[in-house]
Image (cartoon, rainbow, N blue to C red; front, side, top):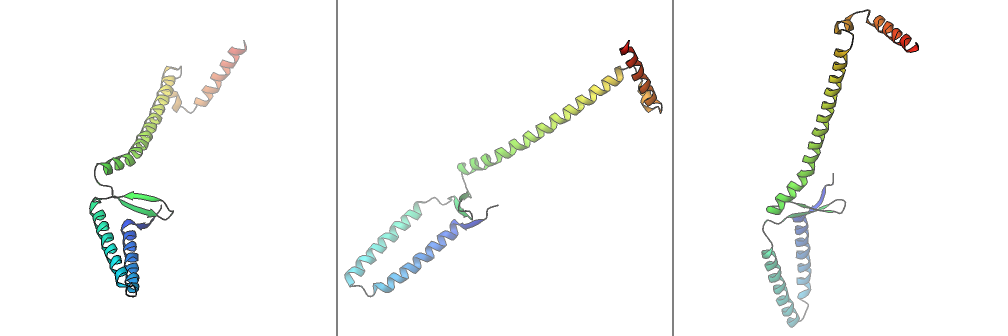
Length: 156
């Protein structure tokens, strides 16, 4: 089974750390810049932070969690709401169909065995041989004489 390589929360944490390191490096270099360029950069940074905050506020609180798997594929987990219920039922549906199919196959096998047994019982009960003869030790001798008489009748 594929294990998650990084969850969305871990990726967000890593991006935040990278952003903090980047801002720390830029802040160190900002001291060497002329004051007017430093002021323009400060204003641009504040505007970027305001846009990022408004974008985060616009995202739904119960968002789906995206997980990056080890083989490089993405998986959606933690789906809430009506879309999440549909996704759960859609994934359970094939499993229910498989179980229903297996039960149907088992029932048909069981029914075929009962029909075969009933045919055998009907053949035994409608034959010339009484049922008590099957328990008799001389039954094999009776069958061999019965076969011999049937063969002689066919030859005539």
